[in-house]
Length: 420
Picture 1: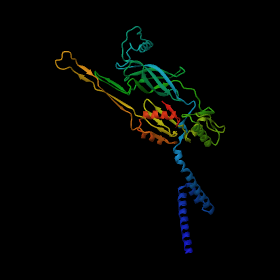
Picture 2: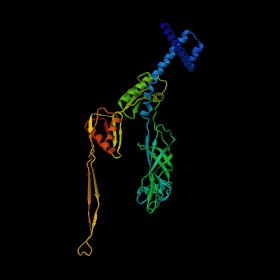
Picture 3: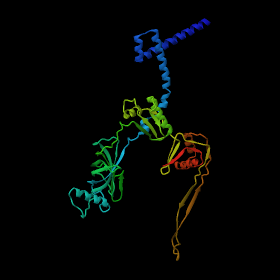
Picture 4: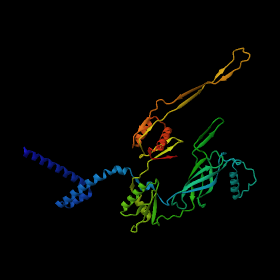
């Protein structure tokens, strides 16, 4: 009996070895490097090396597979930071839109439009000063634009046009040449072109229909860049990465990811909002090449526990790390309903001194919320538990805002409340 059992174990071991050998051969065929190694020399030493490689591949697959979920929670460095100095610049200008179908500014109510029109015509050689002009086809507008970083001279950018006076519609208008200036007072672009308006307004004798904003429009590629902003990024030896959401933990993780990728200490977390990045002396590329190399690195950003509420709209946003201490909550729903039903009292027919009067009748209904219960929330509850507990009390968003503020005042809410 013992001999038979040993034979069965030997057969099972042989079958297992055969299956492993088949699996190894299929793995080798699918890997070009291993397949070339086996075809060149099929010796016992080479077979040993291949076995070690196979074991190493399985070991690495066991390490990489669990990290896939963690990688899914990460973000690229380029998505969570800004490069210091690489920024947009705001441009603004004042101009005139002409060609409107009687929907422009009324010159009597908009003296700046009249003066601008007179000054423009004088530059064109037309003297209309001290003349009584009455045109509704001109509108004074403010022109705004955003100058992207590293925009070259001669490039075109989009602009936005907004009515400044009492014009009712900018459809069909054409913007005249308008210089666009930055905060330093220098002209960086010149705008001109037909205004594209998405809204409209139709008015009749008894009703008016307005869709979107007819006094605001855009001009795609409506401005030409005339001046470049001097900023040479490639010549810098160090830059700072500015976090879009400042956090000490995130800043340190960014520095660790960059240093681990480059195998050197070129990144330093200065504070919660800045990471200093230095170009290594032995690095062949410029600082632009270094930014390109590290901006794709994955980093898991951290965030503080915060509750953002808007009392005007009733919007509540609760962070995932919000926790509360043990607390009991009760919300009373006091409702007062007043109904007015006035009645008319008339005198009897043929009465000599009678008169008709209106007698007020008021019904008052008070509901103190008899079904209100005191509910408790245990310590360390998660976001889902907090939302479930508040919803179980039948509260509306505005009631929840008041409850959250009261919990914070009691010292039981372990998070910051930000009111917007």
